[in-house]
Image 1 (cartoon, rainbow, N blue to C red):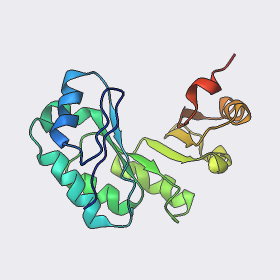
Image 2 (image 1 turned 120 degrees about the vertical axis):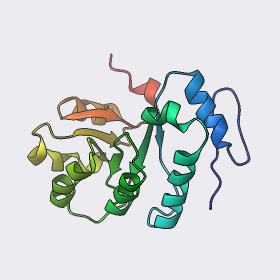
Image 3 (image 1 turned 180 degrees about the vertical axis):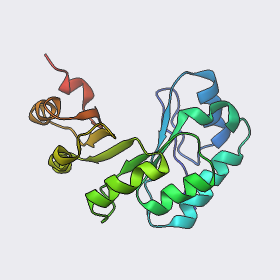
Length: 168
C-alpha cells in the first residue's frame, strides 16, 4: 500500500506516518479527523485494508467517534458498514459517475449525512434541499464563490486560502 504522510504545525513527517501517533494526537486533543485517501479510489482492497488497520489499532475504541472517513463510491460505504464504523462518512462526488439522484436516494441507507461536491456542481442540490443532507463544497478560492455559497444550502467549505476569504 501507499504510505500515509503526516503534516502538522509541530512536525513534518517525511516518511510513513505512524497510526499510533495519529491516534494519540486524537486522544490528547479534542478534534475530529477527516480521512481522505488520495490514492486510486477504485482500489477497493487498499481502502478496506486501510480502514481495517484503523479499526484494529490499539486505542481505536477511545477515539472511534472522532474519525470521519471520506467515501467516493458505494463499495467504500459497504466496507465501512462491514467494519461497523460508528461515524457516518462524508460522501465525495467528484470521483464517481453515479447520477446524483441515485446518490441522494441510496446514501441514507448507509447513514451518510454529509455530501461534499465540487463548487461547479452546487446548483444540483437546489432540487434536493429538503434537509436530508449537509452539503460541503470545494475548492472555494474567490470571494464570488463565497458569496454564492452564502446564498445556498452549503454548510461547509474546503479552501486553501481561508484567511484571504474572510467576510468583511
